[in-house]
Amino acid sequence: MIRDFPLPDLGEGLTESEIVAWRVAVGDRVELNQIIADVETAKAVVELPSPFAGVVTALHAGEGETVNVGAPLFSCDTGEGGAEESGSPAESAASAAPTSTLTSTSTDTDGSVTDDAPGPNLVGYGAGAESGPKRRARRSALAADLVPTVPAETAPADAMPGSSSVQAPAAEVATTAAPSERPRSTPPVRKLAHDLGVDLEAVHGTGERGLITRADVEAAASGSGAGDAVSATSAAFSPDEPAQTASNGRNGSVGSERADVRIPIKGVRKHTAAAMVASAFTAPHVTEFLTVDVTATMDLVRSLREDPAFAGHRVTPLAVVAKAVCLAARRTPDVNARWEEASQEIVQFASVNLGIAAATERGLVVPNVKAAERMTLIELADAIGELAVTAREGRTRPGDLTGGTLSITNVGVFGVDAGTPILNPGEAVILAMGAVRRQPWEHRGEIALREVMTLSLSFDHRLVDGQQAAAFLTDVGALLRDPARALTMV
Image (cartoon, rainbow, N blue to C red; front, side, top):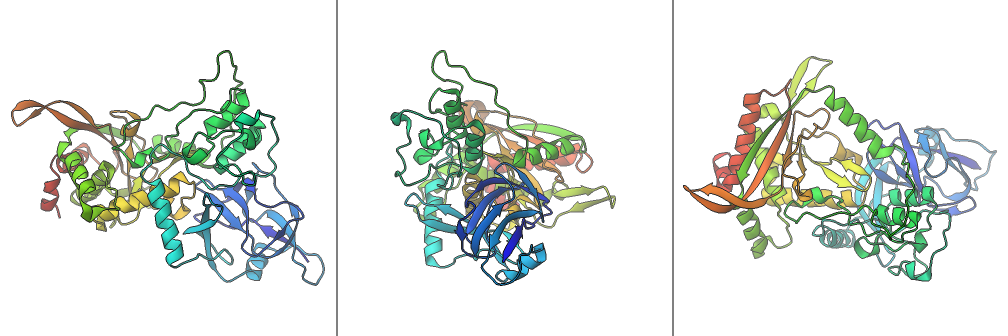
């Protein structure tokens, strides 16, 4: 029996997905829950499992094409008796395993597959999530390996099938993988390589552990060899690291020429652009600035890192700012609110779902920590670290990208002192952290060399007045100036 598999609803009202990479080809035999494709929604890259076993007879969309929810994705001969038929979405779901959760996976350097946190719930089918000590041990090892490294790209070690071939000298062939392994790169980078006609087998990866980056592919396409870019992916998660100077592959060999590159506007970039335009032209933005002596905060961070009691927990200035924001929001609830035009109401949220802006290979994403106000500083640091891991790997769950109530963006890791951030749609405020700089500052009536940071608070003036914004911002500043003040706000 020939059965069609329609693209399922990946949740959160998403209506379409782009085929980033096929994991199977016509004629391949697939097993139940085998990953058949990487698909990119407006929020995340998701590995899509097959709802049944059989032989692939047709792929109804090519890599880079967008498929609407409910449209046929691929056809499979299940070997069952009966006439040829095309199953509806409901029929396809009913024929598969009971309701379960789609599971994100990553491939270790030794080729083994590691299950990780569950992704969006696909009603009616999906790969079951592995549990137990083995999964937790692998997840802990992955987090320990990735979190401390800020300017790095990390991704599953599988490549896009069907890439066109470009001849290259043997010296340029990546040496980080065995001959039988596929080059390590992210799905968007594999898509870019496919569009530019670059053979990833002939590209030397400059990312962490030989990961092939976008700059590497662009450099290979221009004939200048492997790029030397250092990605700033998810640097927003580690504000205490020194700012990195990033190359975008323009420094090729002398005399080399580069052609213009046209990149389709789709996926996360398309979603982010639409959201930012809607926010900028809907909410009246106002920005206030406050420069703060954060020497005490930096001393706290250093002392916690040296304390054996907190071994395994990576507390950063971002985590301290996040805790300060949660405490300050309790005193000024107007900042943790939403303007609802339809009902003509202002909704003040009971919990703080704290968004953390992250620059990734696929564009800007703002996953959020649910009920952040209930967490201790250590719990908040761990939660932010977990968001960092999933953001780097391009597998942030759609559920983590929705429901945010206020956000933090860390521009300081890029060497920037201040800015005027645009609000995440539907939120009342966003706080930007600037770079921590040692400079002369008034301290106890004298001039001393202190560590200083500038905070920038953008707010929706429909919801928050200048006085309320100032009260919130000065509370955050007071906590960073003297973290012991938190005891007076609990």
